[in-house]
Length: 329
Picture (cartoon, rainbow, N blue to C red):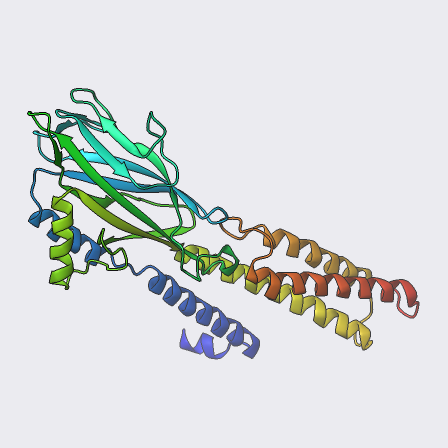
């Protein structure tokens, strides 16, 4: 086996070395991008759940879609009683045994009264509800022009209460949870933060922040921070498409240079190849995951110059082929 490898042509050895290098870089990139902090988040959730009273309502929030152009996200909120004194759980929905109300601060609500207060009457089976969240301002990365390194932050403040047997309104202990499974081209993470200061994130190693958060949860108020960024697969595919664009650009520029210096004849096959590269460049732009709008930073730095240069080189080869008669196709 080793002898066969030694007898390989030097060109073949270079191809094998290039292939192995690409394989190692690709594998390392996939492993690095696949790393998550789910264990830390799950540990914090378990600690909060174990410490907080069981007579509470877990409120699961699932981001279903993100619109980077509008700076909005559609989320589904699903209340889930942990104690039968609050309600009974079904397979997908639940039924309150007391009159409950949940307020979610959102730019658009879907309650029957067209506001953000959702009332649940006792002994009536119900489910969740959808809200439209507005992007939290103040982040320079929250611009689709930075694709695929754009990132967005959505804050979800909520409060809950119930009506007791005497008809008095009482605070309902709640615990916000992340129920986002998967979102096309995006990675979604959730942080617990304080209602009184949304910039203060609850950390597993920060006993004070945990104590402050539990104090708020017991009084029926909570705030969650959802951070949305492009997932690893989107970034890898974007890099591959950019490499294809750059390769096509280098190919047509090299061809035009060789024709201009008369080192290669302006044959019809070269003209066909140049035209194919020009149209393939247009097709490659449509392959970016998530269909980012035209005019993003990648377009200005790579796509527009590459497309224009490819077009000019193709026209140059066409004019040279049409005006020179010292070569026979």
